[in-house]
Image (tube, rainbow, N blue to C red; front, side, top):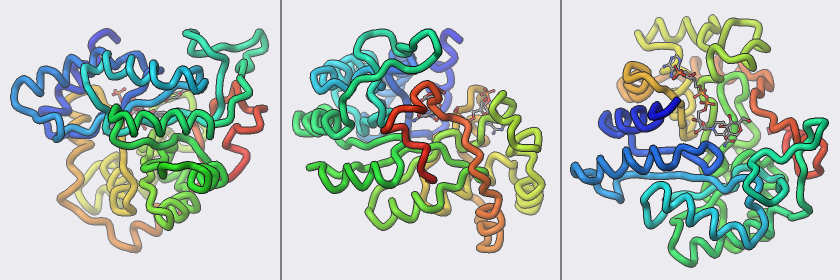
Length: 291
Ligand SMILES: NC(=O)C1=CN([C@@H]2O[C@H](COP(=O)(O)OP(=O)(O)OC[C@H]3O[C@@H](n4cnc5c(N)ncnc54)[C@H](OP(=O)(O)O)[C@@H]3O)[C@@H](O)[C@H]2O)C=CC1
Ligand SMILES: O=C1CO[C@H](CO)[C@@H](O)[C@@H]1O
């Protein structure tokens, strides 16, 4: 909805949020730029905010990386990004159509390996346009490739993760390599069509989560977010109402016990919601490997 993102980001920054996650693909960078500008004007320092954006799949050609990043910076009204992620390992056909699909709904792809894109992203760091670069939805072998062959180490891998998709192996790998894992869809999109696979109305109604939340006098959403924070995973929940935005930030007045952490770990059931299905036959589609 028009202005919804502007309002949400403005509210979040006023409530003390500092990490904003966006992407060219979301087409909300101008709204975010407006909200940031207002906060900078009323005293927030640039270095206190942490802004992440992402290079979309249609921008993997090495010559398209710099212009895409510059466009994001212009729209956000910033002169650097804190973090720039490759949104997905598969390169879609070049151009301004974000979803170039054939008549069967399959993505039209390009024969460009993510390492060639990564080399162009490294140059953004050299040029001072971004402080750090990282990846998103990369599996362990793909991360290994970037860590082995890249000049600059990925700071972050942003992947779908919530109690139904624990990404326990990937987390262990990232921890060993000093890469931060960020969880997208940390609430498993309550109420969405994709959530119907779970057998409960939503993750937030899972009996294990509900019981733990009652014990601490917190909400199920807060328990899901705290579980990630306690295992050193960054979270980027999307909330639009001030009440939800506030709720999702109140995570620092309670602690989950080891037993509670383990019982949440045990809810893992490969409950992935975001599959990038149109590219599922591509050799670099990441989800043939367990995360
Ligand atoms: N790298 C990638 O490929 C991807 C990255 N992302 C990033 O991750 C972010 C979050 O993921 P998203 O897909 O939105 O999924 P989330 O798991 O964050 O779920 C968002 C939904 O949860 C609802 N919600 C928020 N807070 C609460 C609460 N406290 N209690 C109950 N319901 C709540 C929101 O409601 P309402 O709509 O009413 O606000 C919204 O419908 C995105 O905004 C995006 O930045 C997401 C997908 C892919
Ligand atoms: O980043 C994203 C990538 O694609 C997803 C769906 O296909 C989006 O929902 C998401 O926010």
